[in-house]
Image (cartoon, rainbow, N blue to C red; front, side, top):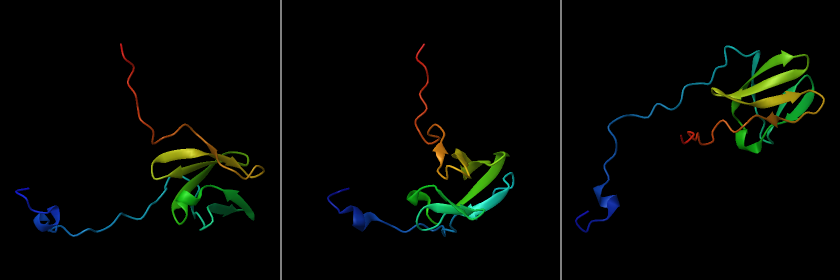
Length: 102
């Protein structure tokens, strides 16, 4: 750094940030947006998802009578049924992947 502050060495990128593309779920039954209180509404029922996903578009697909798969981007988050009204998560899709030591 030659005794200079990092801020003095900063130069802006020449590339323009375009943002992320709009999320689409072509293999799901519908796209839904999570409300600001962390729920999605389906058939006049409110299903608790997560405040973390508030404002995000999710894909939902009915896999059995009243059982729905919830996906965010290309990750399957879990299932909910219209009676329980809460998301039952799958294993953490974002977690670390450990290789077995042989």
